[in-house]
Image (spheres, rainbow, N blue to C red):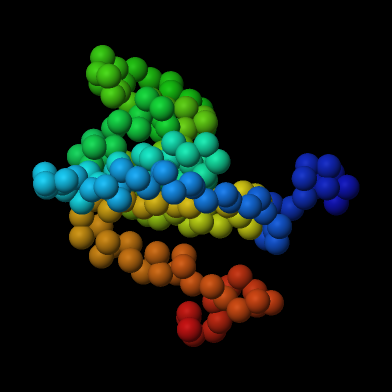
Length: 182
Protein backbone atom coordinates (compact mmCIF):
# COMPACT_ATOMS: atom_id res chain seq x y z
CA UNK A 1 0.00 0.00 0.00
CA UNK A 2 2.84 2.39 0.81
CA UNK A 3 4.46 1.72 -2.56
CA UNK A 4 1.22 2.57 -4.36
CA UNK A 5 0.83 5.75 -2.29
CA UNK A 6 4.40 6.76 -3.28
CA UNK A 7 3.57 6.14 -6.96
CA UNK A 8 0.60 8.50 -6.60
CA UNK A 9 2.80 11.31 -5.28
CA UNK A 10 2.79 10.67 -1.55
CA UNK A 11 0.34 11.22 1.25
CA UNK A 12 -2.36 13.83 0.94
CA UNK A 13 -2.56 16.04 2.85
CA UNK A 14 1.13 16.28 3.58
CA UNK A 15 2.81 19.38 4.90
CA UNK A 16 5.56 20.23 2.44
CA UNK A 17 8.43 22.47 3.48
CA UNK A 18 9.53 23.32 -0.07
CA UNK A 19 7.40 25.38 -2.41
CA UNK A 20 7.65 27.58 -5.48
CA UNK A 21 8.98 31.08 -4.96
CA UNK A 22 6.79 34.04 -5.87
CA UNK A 23 8.30 36.85 -7.94
CA UNK A 24 6.70 40.09 -6.79
CA UNK A 25 5.18 42.38 -9.43
CA UNK A 26 7.25 45.10 -10.99
CA UNK A 27 6.68 48.69 -9.86
CA UNK A 28 4.77 49.52 -13.07
CA UNK A 29 1.94 47.23 -11.86
CA UNK A 30 1.09 49.83 -9.20
CA UNK A 31 1.33 52.93 -11.42
CA UNK A 32 -2.42 53.40 -11.96
CA UNK A 33 -3.17 52.94 -8.25
CA UNK A 34 -0.41 55.38 -7.25
CA UNK A 35 -1.57 57.95 -9.76
CA UNK A 36 -4.99 58.04 -8.17
CA UNK A 37 -8.09 59.47 -9.78
CA UNK A 38 -6.88 63.05 -10.13
CA UNK A 39 -9.55 65.54 -9.11
CA UNK A 40 -12.36 63.07 -9.63
CA UNK A 41 -13.43 61.14 -6.56
CA UNK A 42 -13.25 57.38 -6.82
CA UNK A 43 -14.84 54.78 -4.60
CA UNK A 44 -12.42 52.65 -2.61
CA UNK A 45 -14.13 49.58 -4.07
CA UNK A 46 -13.36 50.80 -7.60
CA UNK A 47 -9.72 51.44 -6.69
CA UNK A 48 -9.42 48.02 -5.03
CA UNK A 49 -10.90 46.19 -8.02
CA UNK A 50 -8.60 48.06 -10.42
CA UNK A 51 -5.50 47.23 -8.35
CA UNK A 52 -6.57 43.59 -8.05
CA UNK A 53 -7.10 43.42 -11.81
CA UNK A 54 -3.64 44.87 -12.45
CA UNK A 55 -2.05 42.42 -10.00
CA UNK A 56 -3.87 39.47 -11.61
CA UNK A 57 -2.60 40.55 -15.05
CA UNK A 58 1.04 40.32 -13.96
CA UNK A 59 2.46 37.33 -15.85
CA UNK A 60 4.41 35.84 -12.95
CA UNK A 61 2.57 37.08 -9.87
CA UNK A 62 -1.05 37.10 -11.05
CA UNK A 63 -1.51 33.34 -11.17
CA UNK A 64 -0.86 33.18 -7.40
CA UNK A 65 -3.83 35.39 -6.50
CA UNK A 66 -7.02 33.57 -5.49
CA UNK A 67 -9.92 36.05 -5.27
CA UNK A 68 -12.71 34.64 -3.11
CA UNK A 69 -16.04 36.43 -3.54
CA UNK A 70 -18.84 34.82 -1.51
CA UNK A 71 -21.50 36.95 -3.17
CA UNK A 72 -22.10 40.14 -5.07
CA UNK A 73 -19.20 40.05 -7.54
CA UNK A 74 -21.25 42.23 -9.88
CA UNK A 75 -21.97 44.75 -7.14
CA UNK A 76 -18.23 45.23 -6.69
CA UNK A 77 -17.61 45.59 -10.42
CA UNK A 78 -15.73 42.31 -10.43
CA UNK A 79 -17.82 40.90 -13.26
CA UNK A 80 -15.10 42.31 -15.52
CA UNK A 81 -12.99 39.34 -14.31
CA UNK A 82 -15.48 36.71 -15.59
CA UNK A 83 -14.38 36.56 -19.26
CA UNK A 84 -10.64 36.31 -18.54
CA UNK A 85 -10.05 34.95 -15.00
CA UNK A 86 -13.25 32.86 -15.04
CA UNK A 87 -15.00 31.34 -12.05
CA UNK A 88 -13.46 28.10 -10.83
CA UNK A 89 -15.62 25.03 -11.32
CA UNK A 90 -13.81 21.66 -11.43
CA UNK A 91 -16.35 20.39 -13.99
CA UNK A 92 -16.31 23.53 -16.14
CA UNK A 93 -19.47 25.32 -17.17
CA UNK A 94 -22.24 22.79 -17.55
CA UNK A 95 -25.28 25.08 -17.76
CA UNK A 96 -26.49 28.02 -19.79
CA UNK A 97 -26.15 31.10 -17.64
CA UNK A 98 -29.08 33.50 -17.60
CA UNK A 99 -26.66 36.34 -18.41
CA UNK A 100 -25.03 34.54 -21.37
CA UNK A 101 -25.94 37.36 -23.78
CA UNK A 102 -24.06 39.96 -21.71
CA UNK A 103 -20.46 40.88 -22.44
CA UNK A 104 -19.58 40.14 -18.82
CA UNK A 105 -21.51 36.87 -18.48
CA UNK A 106 -20.66 34.23 -15.89
CA UNK A 107 -17.90 32.05 -17.29
CA UNK A 108 -16.89 28.94 -15.40
CA UNK A 109 -13.83 26.79 -16.05
CA UNK A 110 -11.78 24.06 -14.42
CA UNK A 111 -8.86 26.52 -14.83
CA UNK A 112 -10.84 29.43 -13.35
CA UNK A 113 -9.14 31.72 -10.87
CA UNK A 114 -12.14 33.24 -9.06
CA UNK A 115 -13.81 31.39 -6.21
CA UNK A 116 -17.46 32.46 -6.30
CA UNK A 117 -19.43 30.15 -3.99
CA UNK A 118 -22.57 32.30 -3.74
CA UNK A 119 -23.94 33.10 -0.30
CA UNK A 120 -21.90 30.44 1.42
CA UNK A 121 -19.59 32.10 3.90
CA UNK A 122 -18.51 28.82 5.51
CA UNK A 123 -17.51 27.45 2.11
CA UNK A 124 -15.81 30.71 1.18
CA UNK A 125 -13.76 30.73 4.40
CA UNK A 126 -12.84 27.09 3.79
CA UNK A 127 -11.65 28.10 0.30
CA UNK A 128 -9.64 30.94 1.89
CA UNK A 129 -7.97 28.50 4.28
CA UNK A 130 -7.28 25.99 1.50
CA UNK A 131 -5.75 28.67 -0.73
CA UNK A 132 -3.72 30.07 2.14
CA UNK A 133 -2.22 26.67 2.93
CA UNK A 134 -1.67 25.54 -0.67
CA UNK A 135 2.06 26.22 -0.25
CA UNK A 136 2.24 23.48 2.38
CA UNK A 137 -0.13 20.96 0.81
CA UNK A 138 0.68 21.37 -2.89
CA UNK A 139 3.96 23.31 -2.94
CA UNK A 140 2.27 26.24 -4.72
CA UNK A 141 1.87 29.45 -2.73
CA UNK A 142 -1.41 31.27 -3.30
CA UNK A 143 -2.55 34.64 -1.99
CA UNK A 144 -6.20 34.40 -0.98
CA UNK A 145 -8.07 37.69 -1.33
CA UNK A 146 -11.44 37.46 0.44
CA UNK A 147 -13.95 40.14 -0.56
CA UNK A 148 -16.49 41.00 2.15
CA UNK A 149 -19.84 42.15 0.89
CA UNK A 150 -20.93 43.60 4.22
CA UNK A 151 -19.79 44.24 7.75
CA UNK A 152 -22.23 41.54 8.80
CA UNK A 153 -20.27 39.08 6.68
CA UNK A 154 -17.16 39.94 8.68
CA UNK A 155 -19.00 39.38 11.95
CA UNK A 156 -19.89 35.87 10.81
CA UNK A 157 -16.43 34.96 9.50
CA UNK A 158 -13.91 36.92 11.60
CA UNK A 159 -13.11 34.10 14.03
CA UNK A 160 -12.50 31.68 11.18
CA UNK A 161 -10.07 34.14 9.57
CA UNK A 162 -8.31 34.58 12.88
CA UNK A 163 -7.90 30.81 13.14
CA UNK A 164 -6.66 30.62 9.53
CA UNK A 165 -4.00 33.22 10.30
CA UNK A 166 -2.78 31.62 13.50
CA UNK A 167 0.67 30.08 13.22
CA UNK A 168 1.70 27.33 15.58
CA UNK A 169 5.30 27.11 16.78
CA UNK A 170 7.71 25.07 14.64
CA UNK A 171 7.64 21.41 15.53
CA UNK A 172 4.15 21.49 17.03
CA UNK A 173 1.30 19.46 15.71
CA UNK A 174 -1.23 21.11 13.41
CA UNK A 175 -3.84 20.93 16.17
CA UNK A 176 -4.31 23.82 18.59
CA UNK A 177 -3.03 23.33 22.13
CA UNK A 178 -5.47 22.07 24.80
CA UNK A 179 -7.78 24.85 25.87
CA UNK A 180 -7.83 26.51 22.45
CA UNK A 181 -5.56 28.86 20.56
CA UNK A 182 -3.03 30.96 22.51
